[in-house]
Length: 288
Image 1: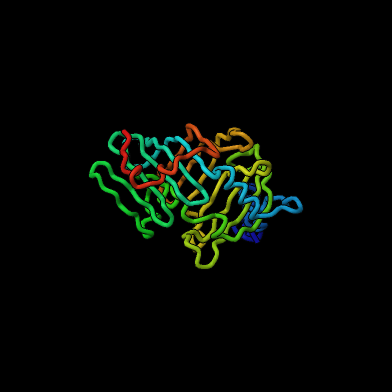
Image 2 (image 1 turned 120 degrees about the vertical axis):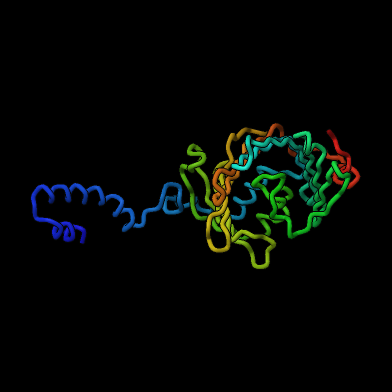
């Protein structure tokens, strides 16, 4: 069809030669459209997963690589936004007890937020604001609001929804060279929410490192199938038998110039945590 169009445009030799060059230039992108080739890193380029691979077990390994029965960590969070004159850095400590679904987070800096605390006593989330000496219960309707002005949500903070219990898992294949970590082959797993599950995402697509189960990337889609945000994990280090990403970068794809990066300073798995940590009394101890 293209050749017929160009032929009708002119019969002059020099114009025909120019048209032939233009036709050759168009042939490559046209072939991509006609053949339906997908961009690098997409499902179209995935390899078949090894026999016996189980999607839910792969998802479980990914969660276990970041969490244990009791986990503590110290970290810093850097928030970048067009409305900020400079990146905002927040340092915090976290304690989590997985089986009881209890967690505690305390802000260490900046000074104006130091002492702010978040306590999850399932199914409730409480926030202590030291400036006004007040404890506030965060209702379920606010779980998706920004946490400390970042691109993370309150639900990201306390993991109220479960990526294991609230989703059905499908193994899409094996990515031999993920875009975010080309040297680490990864399973690609699709998470579809179960009916009536307390989640907002239409689906999640996760890249999970093949050998150790380390999460490398998570893409979050709304119910209409639009990709809204991407979490990428990097700086993978050995912590005992685990391979743990020490850098987590969240990018909202519908907000230009926004990003949030969490960098772990220290993390302890199977830690000894005093039960008193997970109390409202401890929440109100503003440590500056």
